[in-house]
Length: 90
Image (cartoon, rainbow, N blue to C red; front, side, top):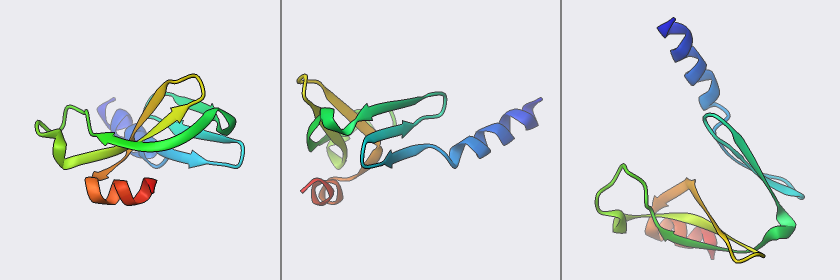
C-alpha cells in the first residue's frame, strides 16, 4: 500500500507546476488543478515568499498575478531568490 502511494506521488510530481496557454493559466497542484482566464489577469508582480519552509522569507520571492477584481493570486510554484523573480516579472 505504501509503495502504491509513493509511486502515485512520483507520477503526479511530473504534472505539478504552471501551464500558460493563449487563453488561460492552469496551476497543476498535488491534489487539484485551478484555471484562470488570461483576460482576468491585469498584471504580474512579486512578493516575499510566505511559505512554511523558510523562517526568514526576505531571502525568497514568488510571482503574484493581479486580477481585474482586485484580488492577487500567489504562485509559490514560481518561487526563487528575489533577484531572479524580479527579473522574471519585469
